[in-house]
Length: 463
Image 1: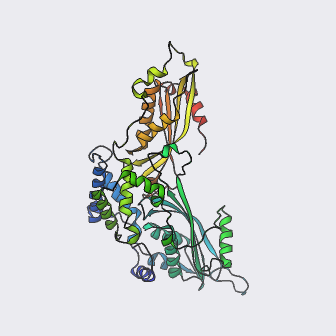
Image 2: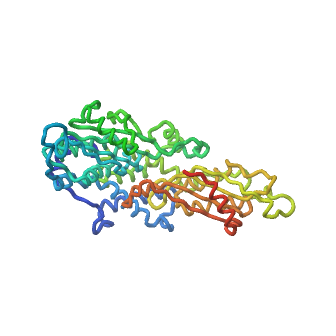
Image 3: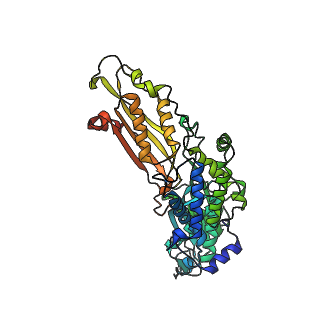
């Protein structure tokens, strides 16, 4: 379904295009109902109450996001291209190339997203497309983006995505050649039981792939030099891009050794949940028996089970009940005797309860501590962050829960800032790639002392 061969492409070019998937009666369509039912199974498997506030509309929200995010299965490229080919004269004197005959045309920095076929999590794509016109005709520039988006809105692998975009444009425009370079970012979920101890964990896996046809078919062709040089004008270094056989490479972190270790720790995937994910694949227009998708339901379920309700114990080293007594000195302490202490960039991972998509980022905690006493340990704060992150969440609640728990240990004067990237912000209709969210909770003295708040906020490093 996702792979593009010659016969599949010809069929798409002949059948035209159907744009959009949110139509009247969307909620009653069989595919939507099937996805909603499957999501309810997944929520039950996580130990959640599907009728609680925040989850009641989650099945429908997930169905809308998935169907919108994979609308490329219901689109073709014929009308996109054929309705936007325009005559354009070429260079007349026979020296050099320009216009509609041999002049290189590039569209850079097309922001796309796609769903990874190995784990069903969205990944970001920065797409650069170039073509060499022939036949004294050019194509409307926006159509390059629309064609790329058709293939991005499917379950994908980066190299196949590049190949499909390249081949579709070559067949649709009939140019002298097409070049495609993709810069892809995949969320790198760690072993969640130990990730918060690893300050060096990188949040993204990056890969650079390319594909070429016609005058770009040879990796060493002169036209590649021109294409890469024009990308460098925008600060894009794509010299390392090489076309590879995607069947021999695995870029998805879900298939890495560390992820396999996490999966083995979680045990075998829940059969009912695996069946539910298989039903989702089928409802999206995919073939669950396609070899690249055979293990996808198990991988997605094992990732989701990291956020099973009440699956972690709060380990606060005895501070929960007696923390305030341990931290308070004898006698009264005036505010002037207290100093602001902070722990910055505590990493966290969580799962949005509205769309069942991950969000991750950092937590900054500030608090007043009496001079001469040892501040609370970083590992304890990170344990609190980790505990509240590893469940279905919303960022506002996560911020409040961390602040309230730390406040119960330290006597009330606490400020918490959470900065996060949400994959649901890129995998739905808004597609706000690169956006981030910040939330803040202030308790005790931080809520009444603007100078203290400002001092802490100014200490947060640029990210």
